[in-house]
Amino acid sequence: MRTQSESLFSESLKHIPGGVNSPVRAFRAVGGTPFFVQSARGARITDVDGNEYIDYVGTWGPAILGHAAPGIIEAVKAAADRGTSFGIPNPMEPALAKRVKSMVPSVEKIRFCNSGTEATMSAIRLARGFTGRDAILKFDGCYHGHADSLLVKAGSGALTLGNPDSAGVPADFARHTLVLPFNDPEALRAAFEEHGSRLAAVILEVVPANAGLYLPRPGFLELLRELTLQHGTLLIADEVMTGFRLGPAGAQGVFGLTPDLSCFGKIIGGGLPVGAFGGRADVMDRLAPLGPVYQAGTLSGNPLAMAAGLAALDGLESSDAWNRLETLGLQLEAGMVAAARSAGVAVTWQRIGSMFCGYFCEGPVWNLADAMKSDRARFARFFHGMLDRGVYFAPSQFEAGFISTAHGDAEIEATVRAASEVLKTL
Ligand SMILES: *Cc1c(COP(=O)(O)O)cnc(C)c1O
Image (cartoon, rainbow, N blue to C red; front, side):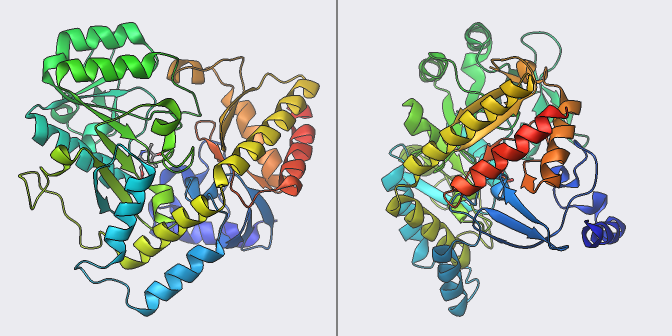
């Protein structure tokens, strides 16, 4: 029964476009109506009708220590007692900056903003200002937030300029963005040969996790680093999702990549609105007030947000979270793969650490075109079957799942049990 959620959703529909403040929450990809959350603690969410769910969305990544992690709640309460916003520096800004630098060696200087979108948008402007070039290159299936120059999809043909991926994005902006398939070294070489000298930056998700989840093929990142260095193009690692999740230095640490700039969000705010971008000091020092690239924010470096971020990174480092997350990820993978096999359903389970995606197709999946082969109607039935059994996966085939350190044997076993039942009904 979700009657309270249903009535809140009809109320929201009257006042908020689609009833939601971010589109995927509307459940359009799977049908039905979203539940409204009363509270969340650890690995579990309780909705306004009193239903409890084991949560694999984790507020889309930030809740890596589980919901309402005690260290974060205490830090935010203590900060709130001192005031919620100052608009002038507070001591937690250099503290969090120093902490990020100690974890991510490629970051020499960092600036905080309020969302992942702001981080990537600003990093792109900075790269353009630094290089004096306009064009950028991104990969099909990688999501970098909703700024104009990044809401661009591949045009027709192998090597075309991008097309707007949203109404309201001028084609004149989109034409400065080249879009290539991920994991395609030939396309990358050809793009650099033709356009290298006018590319300000390449931006990528080192582990693309906004079309499900797939990994960089061996050699792809090395080639990308080599070509960008050769052509004076900056390499921007969008670690908004992978930063602090895959390890202290994120995906770049796991794959040995040294980008010029990195973007952060999600975990770095401990569940409060924080984004950040950082990297080479000579590039970062082109930002105002030192340099000519303008970027600003009334609430940037907000004391509650900085306190939450520091507490999140403290919690991760002090608990050796990443080993535990790997063990849990492996445990869930083993259970889900076995459940799919015994139900005779083709599921390709892709995973790195505590991030995963089960595609309803034969694998492996290396790019957006592969991901699109997944049977989305089947996924939608799976999603609802799991939700009815108290397990909340993301309401879209093309979102990654997340495990938190608050998950344990009980949650994983209950999830696999539910999946064994649901998969047989598909
Ligand atoms: C979530 C996400 C963003 C956008 O962050 P917001 O805080 O939602 O603006 C950018 N890049 C990646 C890789 C993301 O996963």
